[in-house]
Length: 482
Image (cartoon, rainbow, N blue to C red; front, side, top):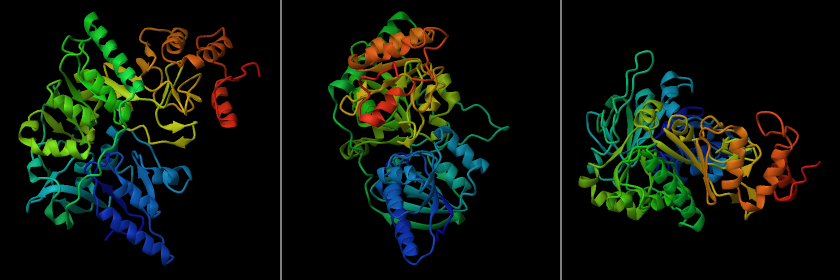
């Protein structure tokens, strides 16, 4: 049914809720067409990253014409950086509106994973919502993977709400983390459903690296910072809702924060629910969880399914357009904690590219939260590449979040509170508190190259650390006199 150069909106936000059978069939068709000398590629739109069964299968079959808004698959990443697949990075909150507006072209198909479907077209989604409601609304036709690995009792976990488009949009009436404003299902015209494929396949489990001294130290610094903010009265004694991005550092960091004596029971309003958040919910350290997907390991998901009646009162899955809504983020006053690839001494953050050129994953939802949160925090280890790369640099090689959006920077060495500081004060506190000791003197020497002016910036030397790494394999020992 799916033809060359058509555009498909797939369910999924991380591997959670990703379709698992139809993408493989499309990849098989692509390989067959290519072998016969015929072209076959499709446009791929999802909520965020997916799993091997979607991005991996399609990339290996060279079946992706373009990809948006976010990805994290190594095979697809190679295709993108080789120039063989077009990729355009987008803020995740803007994706559904762009699809409805038609700025990404016509959406020919929606391919959606469901835990249940009724004769009148009510689809119960599985472990994520993503942009599935918008895909179903705008697609010409719909294919449903009815996956029996997910219980029909998931109905009631989701809050499906799609705002009207401007100029008719009204406020999104969410005033607390667990407010529900929509319906439990995606309702579609049954006439649009071209087929239902029955499966019984579990989500690809999210496998995270174990906690380390570095991640525990970062989590401890954030907990100390928030405890001090609470004590000073700058944030409420009850704390503000927390947003933590996905990945190893975020999962470990949240676990440390949740057990800090200075952090009260708190709420999470984020994109993904990871294993540590579920454990803290079960232990009573987290009161409520709102997100787009359950991006968890197999055992954690089994526990969630075994306790659905209780958890549905304390957990909600929303469309990314709502979870990442600037309006809601600002109204709730979130503390946003996201991960950087590198941070410069001015407070600019690169979260998507390596050496300014090669795409890593994308900006994802970090910009949605960073620009609108009450407190915006970025975290990263101070070094990478076995200590040859400093994550604190004179100037980031690619800018995703500029200095005006970044309030606090944290590494395993400490916390740099940038609020209310001028550029040279920011440089001092980032170097002294966050840079690895082995790189601090190099960074101070860089600052001394421009004694005048508002910014500590040298156009001649701003990327010398990056260039030296490309030439020698290390950022250490830059000769600033050349």
